[in-house]
Image (cartoon, rainbow, N blue to C red):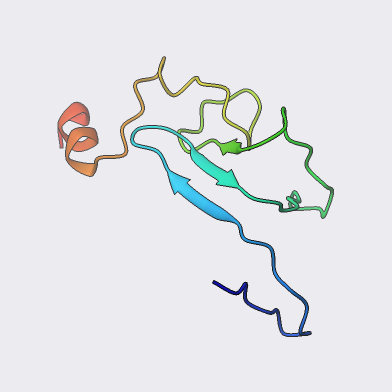
Length: 85
């Protein structure tokens, strides 16, 4: 499968996002990440990058595994039942 070209005709790298059940978003493939001010974000380790979805990580935007301690759930039904809604 040929990789798509960006609007300038340059080859785009293949980046994949995987949303993990009750966990982070895993980003694989070569990519650059920037904060709101345009500063380059350096991943905590090489390879796949895990991005926090629970909001409890001390290393945001990266995941530090704290979603397990706060029992993060990505299921709307489970979250509503826990909150009593």
